[in-house]
Length: 231
Image (tube, rainbow, N blue to C red; front, side, top):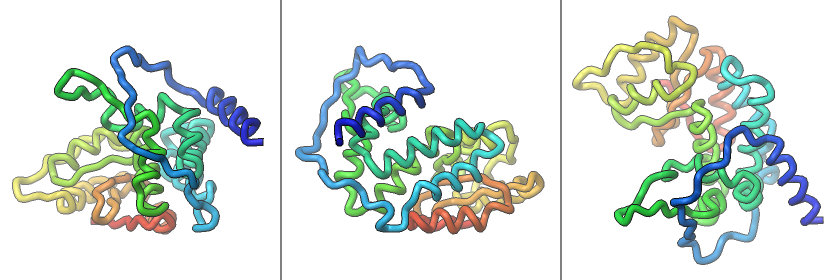
């Protein structure tokens, strides 16, 4: 039965592939994890369902991605959360490329990568919620629906990484600005477009959404124990 399910996951994975094969000629896969977790993350038991992701992606990507593309993002995110071992196997290229260390060389000029990045994240997590947050962050950031900035300058550049704001021209940060104060000034400009920037409290992950979606997204992120605030 497990073998049949794995075959189904592989078939679905190939059908959802939307990028070319990477060049692994200079990559060495090496794990520093002695033993991966055998248990899978609890989802339904904790009230985490695929529909939550469907609603988040729809609200963030409705004017950016087609319905089919939204479904692909949701499928990847759900599989990563519910079955990280299967996800790393089925979406090997994506699992690697959605980690920020992809392509970076060490002092010896080597690119050394963890072969099972999401399973590793799950293995080293104390419980499900930090892992859910990390997986959601990585995938939304990969699809440019979430970004990061912990000071005024990094926040200013991060808005160029969000698809919804990449063509906007915002005022530059002032010398005394910090992350929240700059987002607050950006929100004055975004309000004219019917948009608002929200940040995960304490983590500095940033999203931009319709003002009318603010409360719904805040409630959805709370399901993952992430507090969204408007600076």
